Image 1 (cartoon, rainbow, N blue to C red):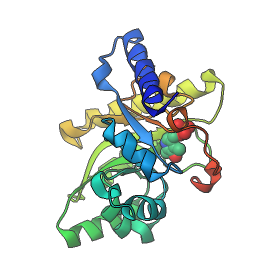
Image 2 (tube, rainbow, N blue to C red):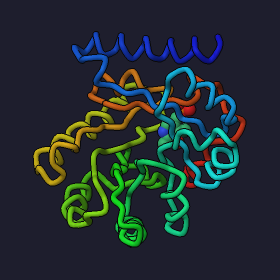
Image 3 (tube, rainbow, N blue to C red):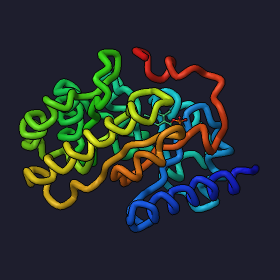
Image 4 (cartoon, rainbow, N blue to C red):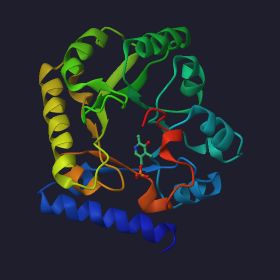
Length: 240
Ligand SMILES: *Cc1c(COP(=O)(O)O)cnc(C)c1O
């Protein structure tokens, strides 16, 4: 299958899952996760009408996207672990940041955005699998954290993001998504972030269909569209 066929196949799966769970297919967005994918392929996907891209490493965005004349046509969203010393560059080369998971990062983002007189859309990353090795706020600390950061006017919190447990066992994966959906509704109910808080980013190649039946509004798919990566995921998620 070529790129268009693979994107079409995933989109068809998304539509089918929406129908099965009584959801509007328009309520789920497909993000193409392009770590290790060459910029030429990304540009091809963009020309096919895709606008939502995710990258995990600031350095890779700089080297791959920015170095290419057409690469700056569309900015990827950031979905990786963000070190505070990369905040400036990340704000330069990426758009929305889905992986905000600690106060020191919020403060670093706020400081830089204040300097620029800008506001930036972010998601909070939550650890829904209780694995000590993964990044993200624990489910328990997310509500208090949301309350703490509400006062940072430079940040517009519009959603939650999670990685489920890495497992082939649906019975272990699905509860992670259920937990996140519940938390998402709780945060929504607080009204802290208003009506714009509406995104639930969960589901990857192996589990996006489960995530959709549990309420995902944005799925992040790499491998199922671009093929297997030669770089191990531990390079992108150092603590895995
Ligand atoms: C790599 C990655 C994905 C996509 O994973 P695939 O299994 O290739 O679909 C999604 N989300 C995050 C945060 C990732 O790092």
